[in-house]
Length: 505
Image (cartoon, rainbow, N blue to C red; front, side, top):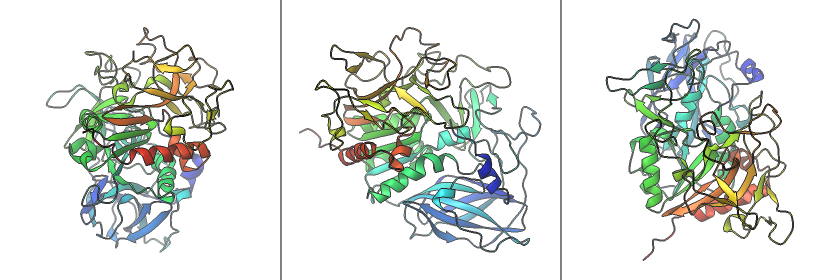
């Protein structure tokens, strides 16, 4: 679940009456990118930054003529709310990405001109990345894999699901979670809730999850290339140029094609690191020439569930769901994890960390952590930091005779999955000082699963190796270097998986 913009940041953005969105969130160097901008100023320009160890300005456009454009009304007739399901269809402005720009995640800031506004407003920096009047996009090299064999996937489908299309002083409440739109299907479109990509929204999730981790990667000399969910969805050959795929932060919405391409990658020896949680929870169906998606979820429309069961739940057996548990790819599932029900997102979670298991595994090399096998108390990875949460995933497990948590596989987790760290969650209750496990689509509908719920860190190998951090906040703790052991584990992971293991002869 993405965070609403905090009141102080909204106030800091109140001088803007300009907003926009991109036609597509990835572009190859030297190609054109189209932006759609609405402003009450007579002119505007675009200022571009590259997100790395710092937020570095890389160029500005000339001035464009400005015009104010309306948001489409909510199709259910809800007054003062905008549509989350329709293309907002604002006129485009084209910009050619210079050949000498370094590939990476870029931010475009929309700057008003004229009417006595500052000629050269202050530059954004990493501490003030979050806000409106800006958007992000991925710049990719002409030759995939030419700069790095690590591919960082920005979870753009999840971003669009939570995007409310608000702006300073105006809460439009248009998202999959706020006043969603449900379509009955037909005429080539599946049944479900519909979300359009062509809507403004600003930068929120990128600032929280991605920015600190991207900066950490560059500080520590890990070159990566980037893609979006749509890139992975559309291109079945994309992953062939890489050895390691990174899923970072909150990666909830996956298409059938994304999952098929990822699974084929692993079978062929490719590695995946899920430094994320709530991963692959809902299936989406891109529509409208891949400018929107439909997903049959359990979200209310008004006071009603428009369709239950929600048939795009990955783990639920067919025909009530997809019938392909996400565990078979990720090793874990949100239905065996939980979330932190804080009033203020993301809240100050318990700072206990993962109980260490198998401390002699390569993942723990150089950390000095112990697992209690010598008779002592096992150490905790990330103790003192909010590592667990704000959402976390887990595997069904049972303790063996030595008190080691082992995956049972009853939920679809691969047999070779090794639990390296575990944090057992509290049952659902009203005490908001604890994590609560589950989700109404989890234990309520899966009553036969008797395993305790727990945030779970671990990995398995099935061709390639798949690692899961089991928590949305791994990239935050690592990126801000809040715990040296988490940093070392991340380095061990990247150093080991950035190159495919040699194929057996």
